[in-house]
Length: 410
Image (tube, rainbow, N blue to C red; front, side, top):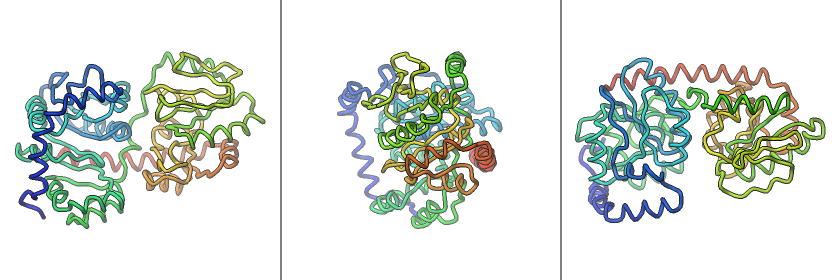
């Protein structure tokens, strides 16, 4: 196990002193492209926009939207065992926007500062975390080293490592091993990750499975739900989300077939990127224009951020996006937690274990073309939804055990 800091990490540490020379220019360019928050961009320079709450503070970091939303279940369970407060950091605006409507108890969100010495110091001096939890994949060397110097316990929770990412890490294996050696706790998402970690010298890392199934249901606006529910009445509603063009092509083709027997059926398209262009060859309403589907509309383009909780609540079936292309899948759990029957395509590398577990329990169904999607939509889904709920309960027990283990580090 690594004890002395490898030369590559020393070089990285030296190199981060140069970041402030270009940081503001870099952030201004991102602001112009809409990649940074208009008022909270200063957080990227370590400057806090909220006060630190009194008492113990547990800092959790995740890279993006899906990972941040998955932390909610872990935080909820940790909060049931401690009076500590929680700080979540992430790097994307989408994650921040989604968290605004889905904030866990006693939790603050900030954008992770750039990994440069002055920004790290300002951030850590203000927040003074009592525990740091790196979730899934993102690990910033400068922060790991700085926290170790401050004797702040750190953990890598539910680490996800594919064969491809493991090969990349082996190019700087001494550095990665050194960073992992600073952790007081490491847990793996699956046995494949466990085996990869063993290749870096960390044997018998416990496999906790995904924490995504245990996140509470996505939030929603009750008034919007009441309005949309009243408007839709007893129409059959299904959704493809978070969608990409190949998912939408299949969904639209399947929907045309469904309309032959159910002319009032409604397909909701909730794209991963609402800002791109769309070609919808059926009568449709557009959410971003303030429209609600009229009886003549067969499709509802839900091109807004942070409203999946609303749309999953009015849908009965969800085709999970990204599972029909090289995106390799998004999480099925947000839809499953809101009583949607789950359909998915064959491309699920990002959530291989999740979909395999659901499929094995008859809690989800693989569909490979528009005909199979249309046939699946015509089935009764009661048993499938019940089976998915039982799978979720199993994951909840594992996540609660992880929460207890992490709190022992305080």
